[in-house]
Amino acid sequence: MKKNKIGFLYLGPISHIYHSISIAFNLSNHTLFDVTLFVSSELNFNTIKIISKLYRNNRCKIEHIHPSLFHKCLRFFKKRDHPRVRNVLQKNKKKLLNFNGLILTDRHFINGKERKPSYFLADHGAGDRARGYTDAINKFDFILVSGQEKWNRMREYNYISEQKGRIIGYPKFDTVSLQVKNKRLFNNDKPIVIYNPHFNKKETSWYLWGKRLLEHFLIHKDYNLIFAPHILLFNKGKFSLKKEYYEAENIHIDVNTSALIDMTYTINSNIYIGDVSSQVYEFVAFQKRPCIFLNPHHVKWQKNRSFRMWKMGDVINNMNHFESTLFKAVESHSAYEKIQGNLIQETFSIKKESAGERGAKAIIDFFESHKT
Image (cartoon, rainbow, N blue to C red; front, side):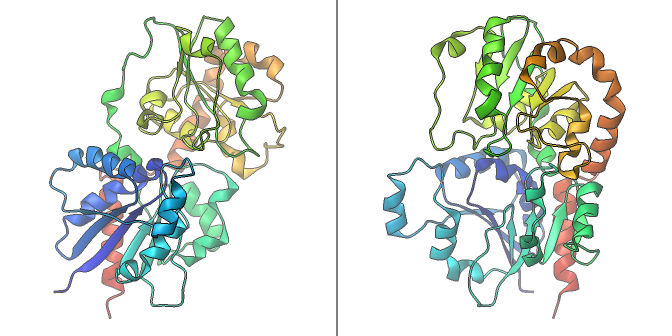
């Protein structure tokens, strides 16, 4: 019987890999599926090789694809971890159109009117932001969803149905090794705070309050601080901090390593400080703990579904209140534990069967139901 050729596209940030790779590994062991993982950078290739050690029996092939020579040359003048996705897709259009299915973690489609593969969305992140709900989702043939809240919201927009999607859980939890728990990051036992600002200029707290926050921890040594921003915040190299921050024994700065995305820092922190990053859900899913949210843009968030996560902790609208809010964070956490538990259940479907196994079964069932 002819095999279904399935391609998983890992052409963007390495953080996206974690959101579907366990599905690929599980699917590759099915006899009627031939799975290829497409990468366009050595960084993504090396990341996949590391994760694949958890799935030694997988049958995935890894293939490098590249943009045109012109765009390769152009890239030398730009500080990017990977070529532009649209340029890679355009150059490799003929190859990719021969696949039966393509699994994406973003919204980069192949342009053209030719026969297309079936498109599957294994969306990255678990957040509430409105950017996760756009009409581009209508282009997908099937959607893999992490939990009931995202399902409900997509259904309200008519993006999803019982025939067009399935709740599978959160594939990232399959591949994150919990051995990073209790990793010693500081030479003391002080509470550890993680500051995790997003990259979007209109939503992040970094440009307005970030350095003021770092200055607080430089002066006040009662806490350790991990500065672990979204990996895209400084991906174009626009980053500079005074050396005192790097030299401080209670401050750990990381703007570009895999620890930003493999939950090393969210697992090993005691208090979360952020704005709109979905990593806060990963933080509380591992263990319910105090959260503080920064609102320098003065968003009216209370009735805004895109800021649902801010119900899990104190929200600061004035940076002058930061010190007192941090001081009482542990004490006030009990007021948020129940809602954290509720939001975790709504955000992540956790079952005995892994998300990777559930995702693979959903793809298999899709092709079974679309046999011609």
